[in-house]
Length: 185
Image 1 (tube, helix red, strand yellow):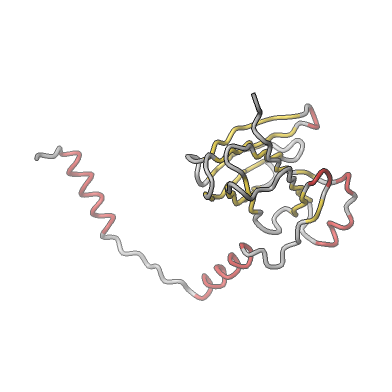
Image 2 (tube, one colour):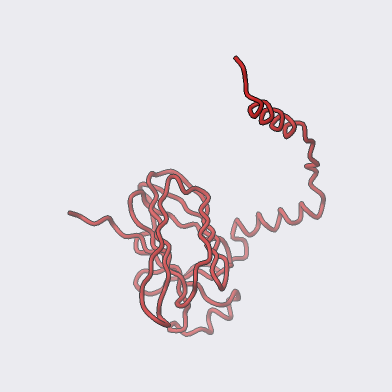
């Protein structure tokens, strides 16, 4: 079997990558950063979610990374704050889920949506949504039996418990997650 010059060069480059020796030593300062990441991912010190209107769950923005449990072949609707503009949607796994943009309202009340539909159960990934105001980090799970029916997550503009209690209900900035059953024919 003969190979082309291009194939030879590609193979040569690939072998060079394999010969690179990287310094993978974790320093003390890096260990501290990893501890902080672990604490955040375990939601230690997070403001716990609370009940909102219409069966919603109120989640404080950046208090922790919410784990959203979706259901295969159901749509999960992530609704952003009114007036917020999406600058990027970056799923960890775009093969086993569909992601579709949406829009509701008009003028100052316009809200952009990211519609998510997992295609199978027992899968997980993350989703990063960049907007002109913040970056949302979500963990997505798909399970056949367990999911958050008609759940809604509201993002409050503060991280402290005192700030949350001081906000009247009508002043909430919302980010909703609303699984909907598939339409019947």
